[in-house]
Image 1 (cartoon, rainbow, N blue to C red):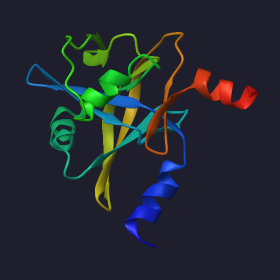
Image 2 (image 1 turned 135 degrees about the horizontal axis):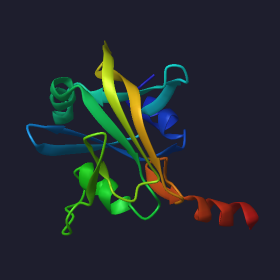
Image 3 (image 1 turned 180 degrees about the vertical axis):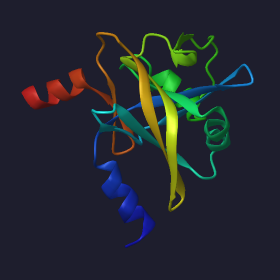
Image 4 (image 1 turned 90 degrees about the horizontal axis):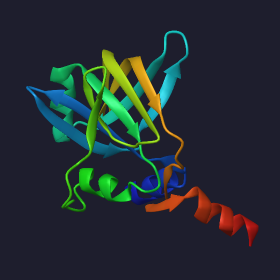
Length: 160
């Protein structure tokens, strides 16, 4: 199969949108990602996947911790900013969770300590032990077939 067919198939799986954040030498780093999943309830574990050519890879390797920020439908501009698609003129609203920078007002903020990493193909998987969670009552931002969506827009499509 060719790369385009593979990308199209993977893009057919609707996902939430996250920003992975970390801090190294008192500087905050972030990147947009949808390669995130829970791994285990006991112990509570989550995994993120980072391209081996991404700048964020070395930062997470050195910091040994990260946060997953599940974005709300109102945070598309932040997703685009951290994906390098758009400059955000406003200041990025960071707070902290267990000492890790997190995106203010995200649907969920999950802080993790890296307990294992695995190089698989052209990505590295970081398994993190979850040490903190904060939740907000917002609707999530969704990514499907290369475009952003919201639950309300999808609900309208279903009801018509």
